[in-house]
Structures are given as C-alpha cells and as structure tokens.
Amino acid sequence: MKRGLHGMVARLKVTLWSLIVPPTVWAVHFLFSYLWAAIHCAKAGGFPRLPVVYAAGTFAALAIILAAGIVAHLQSRVPGDPAPHEEGTDSDRIRFLAFSTVLLAALSFVGVIFTAAPVLFLTDCR
Image 1 (tube, rainbow, N blue to C red):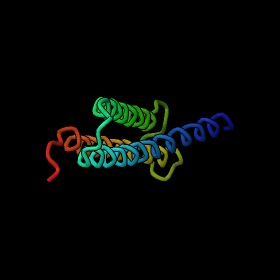
Image 2: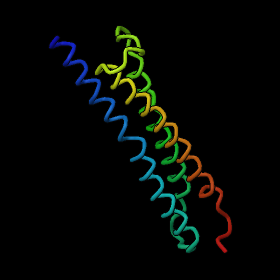
Image 3: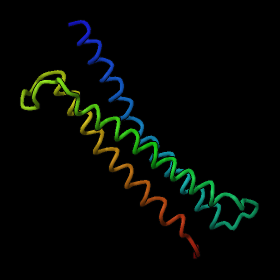
C-alpha cells in the first residue's frame, strides 16, 4: 500500500508540474511577442538578431509545451491502473487531471502559434 501511495504522489507531482508549465510558457511567450512587436513598430534599430531569437524562442516554447503535453498524456495512461469506469478512485482523479492537462497543453500550443504568427510576419505598423 505504501508503494502504491508513494507512486500516486509522484504521479500527482508530475501531473501538477505539467499542468503549470504550458500556460506559463504561453504567458511568457505572449509578453515577449508584444515586446518584439513594440520594438519593431517603434523602429528601434540595433536589434538585427531579434527576429531569429524570437523565432528560436517560439520553437523552444512549442517544444516545451509539447513535452509537457506528452508527459501529461503518459500520466493519463498508466498500465495497471483500475479501469476508467471505476469513478471516484484517486487514480481516476489523477488520470482526469492529466487528461485535462493534455487539453491545456494543446490550447497553449495553439495559443503560441496564433501569438507568434502575426508578430513574425509583421510588416507595417500604421
């Protein structure tokens, strides 16, 4: 019983970690997107590598969110758990939280794409 409880607590910690990461990464990327747009529209020179850094940051954000989604997906499908129809068990609650995290990661992934696309192709700010 102790081993099962220890494993469940470890799974809950991983699930909570993956629940926090996607929206946090999206929020940080969102702020940098607006910073890049403001610098570009203000025509503040001296930042020739900023578009490359921004694109690399966008790909890094997408990779981190994808990794958190994969971890959450793996947490939602652990072999040896009771069947999903046995509602009310701790394992069922953790799997539901993990599945919700997969959906949140997918939403954050799409959010980063929709935030980055206009900024990467920004031409005229009038």
